[in-house]
Amino acid sequence: MRRLLLFVMMLLTLAVPALVAQNLTLPMKNGSIKFAVIGDTGTGDKHQLAVAKQLTATRAKFPFEFVIMVGDNLYGGNSPKDYDQKFAIPYKPLLDNDIKFYAALGNHDDPSERFYKPFNMNGERYHTFKPADGVRFFALDSTYMDEKQVKWFEEQLMASGSEWKIAFFHHPPYSSGETHGSDETLRTQLEPLFVKYGVNVVLTGHEHFYERIKPQKGIAYFITGSSAKLREGNISTTQLTAKGFDAGYTFMLAEIAGDDMYYQALTDEGKTVDSGTVHRVGKVEPTPNRSAQPVVATSGKDAAKPTTPRANPK
Amino acid sequence: MNVIRLLGVCTLVCAISAVPAAAQTKAAPKPPKPQISQTTREKAAQDNANPDALVLADFQKRIDAYMAIHKNAAKNAPPLKETKNPAEIKVAQETLGAKIRVARATAKAGDIMTPEIRNKFRRLMYPVVQPTARDKAAPTSPVPDIPVTGTPVQGTSGRAVKADVKEGLKENAEEKKEEGGKPVVLKVNAIYPPDTPLPTTPPQVLMNLPKLPEQLEYRIVGKTLIIRDVEANIIVDFVPNVIQ
Image (cartoon, rainbow over all chains, first blue to last red; front, side, top):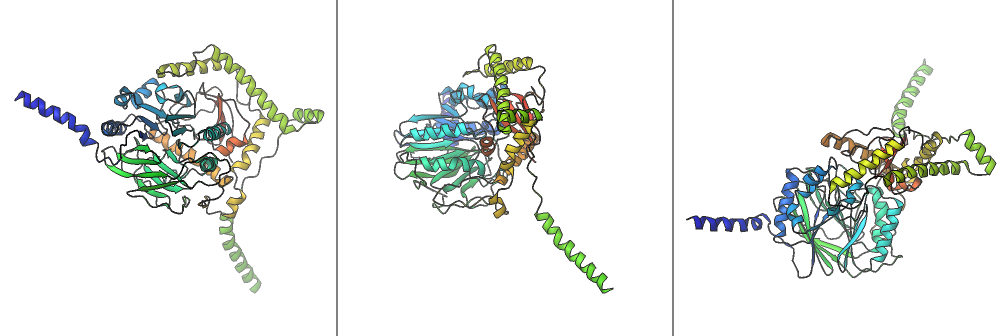
């Protein structure tokens, strides 16, 4: 009897993560680059913990190698206790498995966070890394986009060759959020560089919801700012939205294989809110005279076909 | 009698038409007038130099002097370097701040941002946060349509920059309510409250202001532009009323 009980318990233990992490649509191809995206995480509250738990459970099915943090990593202070409660403890199972986190700074983050080794910022407010051949990430500090940073970004883009170029930072250049909306001034600064050097995907947060924007000038934009904070019903009706979800806490998974980036956004309960593919048409060489970049198309369950982009009326 | 009636009607018509007109054309604040001290004017005349250039050179000199203090303090504080231990970051930041405060114990507002430098900064900020020709052409649509292809949108609406600043302030106020962050004390050597969000400084504002060393940054708090020591997390000096 005791043996049977033990056996049942063992089965349950094994089954729980699988039950929690539901219906992954990602192809999980051999040799692909797998990562997760979280944003506006640093509360240390039950919602952060719930998303962290789901993220951990999901990894049993989708073995992502690193996590992108799009800012607001620590709300309400940066004492050692804050680092523990709002980062080290919630993500301990992942950190213990050597999963790397790459952070960008949000408006709630003190720039001194760049010295915290587990954020992998190399002591810099903006940084770049290449997880594998053919893919490069650029973390920017959108709270302080000065000339020096813009110059650095352009130099890095120019040197990056025909790789997937993924930029991540806090403030969304396009957003249907009622509270903030599109950050037009930032967009004016960055979009010409995205277009000129062929940035494929932009990951942001700040808005406390999930939104995938219809491709803008051939670039795919995602907002994942509800990994611990939520503004329910905050997505207003605009022409920008390909898919929006503001009714629960979310995170995103992504997988790059060849010219495709597969994505799936999930809730803290493991429900899928969005999924699809960003397809990169052709390789992009850095050609400084390029004025437009029609190289990315997205498709997804709920995706609208790439259409004429319109600005957020906000 | 008829004349009086006619006069009455005219007055009424004028009053009715004036109300919406007045509401629509809220007078934009006037650009700040240059305030150059007598000493600077005399020096400019003597050297055949631009007085504004002298004001900016003076600002640079004062920033250099501050940086000398910062660097000296940093020599005697634990280094800010990458670490797994957040306590080390906190100690390094706080020790540096404490040493700078001791070295600048008598520093007061206006030591770096002197009246003429403040005036220069207000003049530098003015064009960035005022409605531009584009704003005036399309007063109800601050965000232009984005073309599908073609050249990127050049320049940013001054209204959008101002809106950004205002949004930042609103957001800070809301989040302070949510998070319970402390108000920023506008005082030289004051610590920027670690639990209060840092308002985003619009890129267009940064483009218009003199460059700072990487240890310092500009932030807009309310209507005030502050210079913050990033590594020590203290307010170095500030310019009130840069946003009108």
